[in-house]
Image (cartoon, rainbow, N blue to C red; front, side, top):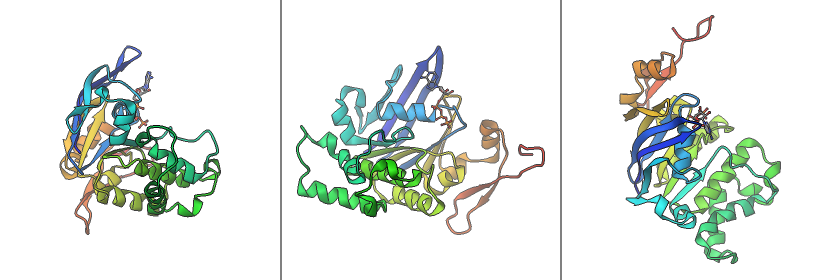
Length: 260
Ligand SMILES: Nc1ncnc2c1ncn2[C@@H]1O[C@H](COP(=O)(O)OP(=O)(O)OP(=O)(O)O)[C@@H](O)[C@H]1O
């Protein structure tokens, strides 16, 4: 299912945190949202998973304006893995993942056999099945992150929104997660700080700068030294990955800090 942000604007404290952002992710496409700290990535994503209501503009899933749907109905379409989705109560890992089924339930009925199987498959897919009986609060940051991804998958969404999902993950789990995002068949909008991970895994990247779209397109077209210098204030050397052909950015460190 395709996802479109149509001139989304978010205003707070007399300031436009996101300014007329238009962005599209086609069905099954992986789109990366990158940009400096405070550029509005999380704010834009919050509009997609409906924690924030845009001051203007709309978010459309499959052409339907999400603001016209109930929270339950939009949660059947869009699942989110967010930075703030921690855990306050010490539910078991299996319970947390089972909560992903909530949008599909009219009430508090028990999970069906199919749903129990699904929860188990999601636990296995994210490599946390062996933690199923553990309390969520006892997990490491990376383990907890993978549980939250399992919960999002158990939601059986059409669109997956992830805010910095590689935070806390070791390199193997970063590679596994991003490979999975490429192969899962869902439409994915993912905010990433690591431009090389974005370049390696995203069909297209969108660059936010001060709440506005600075550029969008295939990584090789967008992540140029000039664009990166203008937006991030450091100049990379861009090389081509010898195996995948993806652009990869190399940084030069000076003894005075900053990039030449
Ligand atoms: N409720 C709010 N009121 C006022 N300003 C806010 C509010 N929420 C966010 N901001 C500001 O909006 C800007 C964008 O924040 P946002 O979290 O979207 O950026 P980001 O690109 O995700 O940053 P980071 O890379 O640091 O996570 C920041 O300057 C932030 O301080």
